[in-house]
Amino acid sequence: MSMSISLDGDDEVVSAINTTPLVDVMLVLLIIFLITIPVVTQTIPLDLPKETNQPRITKPENINLSVDKDGGVYWNDQRVGNTERLVEKLKQIAVTDPQPEVQIRGDGSARYEHVGRVVLACQRAGIVKIGFITEPPPRG
Image (cartoon, rainbow, N blue to C red; front, side, top):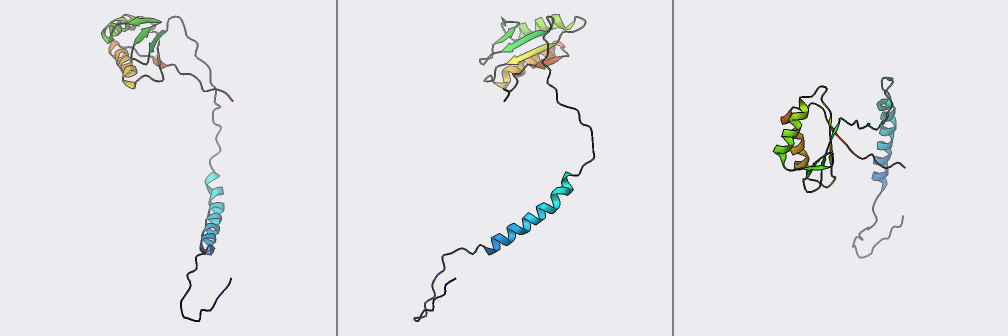
């Protein structure tokens, strides 16, 4: 630390930042975190279920509804004209016992309202089992 004495009485401005208070605060925060982390990590010992990802096997009786990015709906690779036609076809399937599962595949760039219309059509027809088919994330 250098000090200079000015003879003419002008005080010089010190342009260096005093970091001592900053270091003090950081040390106090470090001590607080070191004390509280073991308290937070102590929990009740539980045997949690392990994650398993089993791909669903598409049964022939399941119905695959696909929604493309423009809102077009496809019933097992055949285009369905409009929502009312879809509801009619779903009502015919809804009365079977056991009721097949409807699996909806929506394009990633499709608007939510297009997929929502298909879900609403399933509800109007009385379909109980509705599932969504997604692509698993890449491994590695």
